[in-house]
Amino acid sequence: MVGIISSGIGSGLDIQGLVQQLVEAEASLPSQRFAIREAQFQSRLSAYGSLRSALDTFKNSLTRLNEAETLSAKTIATSNEEAATVTVDETAVPATYTVDIVRQASFARLTSGAFANADATIGTGTLTLSLGSDSFDVAIDAENNSLAGIRDAINNATDNTGVQATIINADDGSYLVFSGASTGAENAVTITQQGGDGGLSAITYDPDNSITNLTLSQAADDALATVNGFNVQSATNEFSGVIDGVTFNALEETAGETFTITVANDTSGVESAVKRFVVDYNALVTTAGNLASFDADTNIAGPLQGDSVLRSLTSQLRQELSEATSGAEALFDTLNEIGVSGDENGKLVVDDEQLASIVSTEFSAISRVFSGETGYASRLTAIIDEFTETDGILSARTEGLESSIESINQQRERLNSRLVALEARLTRQFNGLDSLLGQLNTTSSFLSAQLANVPVPSSGNN
Image (tube, rainbow, N blue to C red; front, side, top):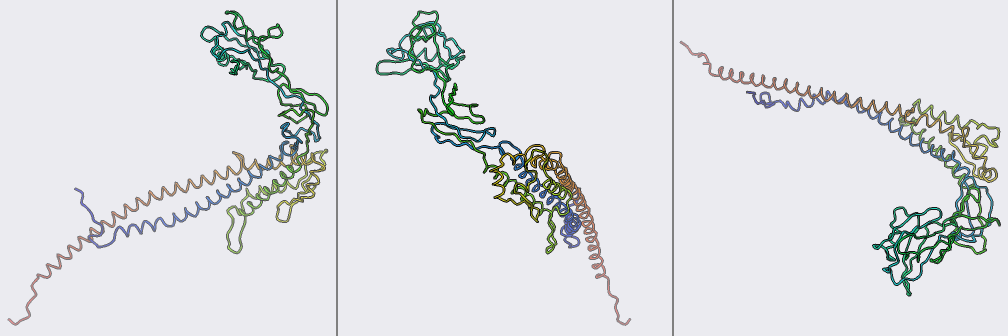
């Protein structure tokens, strides 16, 4: 039977408190050391994260400067926004064009004669409906030979190539209307019938074969416009390829009243892209400076003060910015020539007036400074990628710090295991001491009692 031990009963000592203090004393120095090291690692880890974020932002501005859509961008304006919507890409040439929307594209519409109502019986057989060169067949029998039944059979046909049927209930009767889904002269609608009782001939139309039992209420036709006096046509209302890099979509006919479409270089967009590049680079410089700083007054260093990775990165970027672009055809080959220079703090400064002047007079030259293999955007991006890609330098440093933090956690676990064992050992030892002191106290009490009963010798005469 295991005895129940109550710590401190024999000695009166606070055994639990003593053990706890000894265990805490044992844990104190290692715990402080772990905390300090982990804080240092976490600080550096966070610092690399801030650096990566600044690099990503700067890279985004470089990406925009390396895209033709940015540095060769065009603006588009029209004097009649209700007549047409207009879009432009970087291949367009700055110029003004005079446009007239003579006719919008239309789809074919055929209308039957009046029937009594939608339930009126038409006939049976097979209808062949064509939209341009595509056709499909619809079988009409006693189950669907009404006006409504024929409408539903056509619209529900799984191989319908683009002919829709509707019923219009007018004052003088019900009309079956057929519409083509596509505009353009090549998308005429024809309807023929075969077999059956012949009643379906009332809704047939094939003018090439002199069948006109339906009325052509709207012909399929191409859109027609004039551009600088030249006729141009389109099967849809969209005119693409008529003007290089420009697409306009006819919204309404202008009936001889021309309007203008003006293409111009997007100078403000290019200026904004260059200034964004400067702002993002300066933000990167600020971030790097803060991470590598040292405050002599407080004796506090930034988390990456003296870090070789940060030093290498900033050095490479500064060096690349100071190098000229290559290429014999380049009108400008340095940032300074387009109004971007460095200051005493290692940041870039934009001369707004110089930049605006160059963008206005030498628009394409800006693209050659930044884009292409030898442009600043590609070269700076290559440096950034070396540090930020999945297997790049920053990833290696980050993984190393994360591994170090994990190692500290493992050391903490081992320390905790040792402390648990130490607590158990000290508890056993103090409980043993307490038991021994209890026994000694008992013996002492017994001896004291026995000695108290020993007769004291008499000092009287015999």
